[in-house]
Image (cartoon, helix red, strand yellow):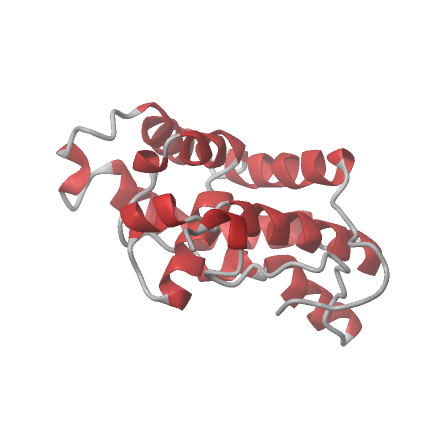
Length: 184
């Protein structure tokens, strides 16, 4: 949902962005070396190779680690304040918005919700994978999704404080909401 106000949009700070990526890396690190190796293989793979189409390839295997990752991320975020959760939600919102692009959608396919959830997967895998996909959309995966990541910090805010955070960004994380990412 796009927020319309007279105030200038609130942008994520570099400190908030660093905090998001640090939390994500810490949550993955707590799960041990196997998901680290799987995530690395996704960043380092040649997208022209179709070797990962097998049921045991890294893109499928990492899916088994998403629920434990989100659980760890929740534990690491347990003591965050309302404003801190709002700041992190704003960063996720911006990251999802920035990769809401036609060239990435061509690789991932999917409906409105499916494309959003795929972008959630891209963010959930961490900065290295996010930057790889941003630079080369062919690095994205078909049918990958992590719906929970899309509103992770917003849901935590709502659970703890009884309200949805107001990011003040003036942008939408929803699919096809980034006009700069789509041809007219």
